[in-house]
Image (cartoon, rainbow, N blue to C red; front, side):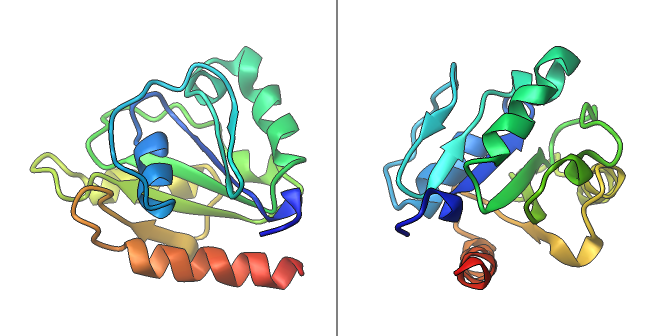
Length: 153
C-alpha cells in the first residue's frame, strides 16, 4: 500500500480490540497495549477509544479519516454499553465497515453488537465477526479490506 489513502483507520471504544485486531491483520505478535495517541503504521491508523467515548474527541476521528481509505468501526461482542453516536459513519468521507471482535468469548452477544453497528450507520452486509486470538473471520475481513483498497486505486 503506497498511498496514505490506502490506510485503514480503526475506531471504537476503549477495550474493543482495535489494537489487537491491527496486530493480527499485520501478522504481529499479539499483546495488549492501550492506545494513548493516534498510531500510524504503513497500513493502519489506530485511534484511542476516547475518540468514540468522549463527544469532544469525535471530531478527531473525523480528522483521522482524511488519512484513510477505509474506516473500520470496531465493537466488542462482550461490551454491554454502546457509546458510538447514531449514524456515526456518515460523518466520514470514505467507506466504513463494522467489525465485531471477541466472538470467541463466552459472554459474546452478537445481536447487541450488530444493533450497535447498525445504530452507527453500518450496513448489516458490511459487518464482519472476528476473533483476533483464534483467527476466526480474519480471512474474510482481509479480503473485504483489500477489496475496498483496490477500488480506491
